[in-house]
Length: 142
Image (cartoon, rainbow, N blue to C red; front, side):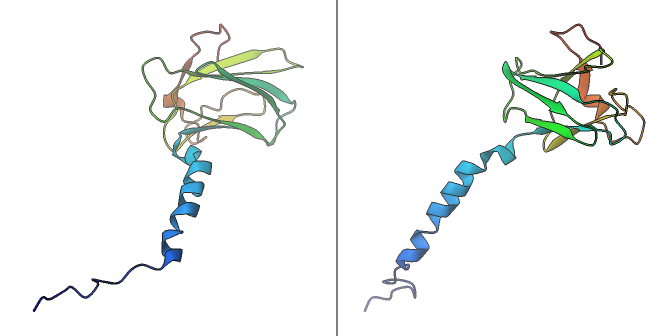
């Protein structure tokens, strides 16, 4: 007489197998949550709209930030030695250009801009200052 384990001869219902389809679709549409994100926060007390350019490994994004707004971009999942991320911004009224080079850290790197559009480097500002350096490709200072 042959003994079989209790689950031998039973099959999973067909609908259990179909649960893989939504899981794979969710992973395909939400893969970017694994990427490190850089968030630039512009102070609510800001006076002007700021214009910006993100340069992430030669992927260029342009836009604007109103007071109280911000901008986000993603780094690379596995950055190599050649990876770079630069954020340039300016105000039409003041004409002063800023540029920083960023080394993103997973999950988020936060940069806070004060009312004048300068990086808020105070102790408890929330800015990840240790992740910022001067731009390599732009002469504008942070």
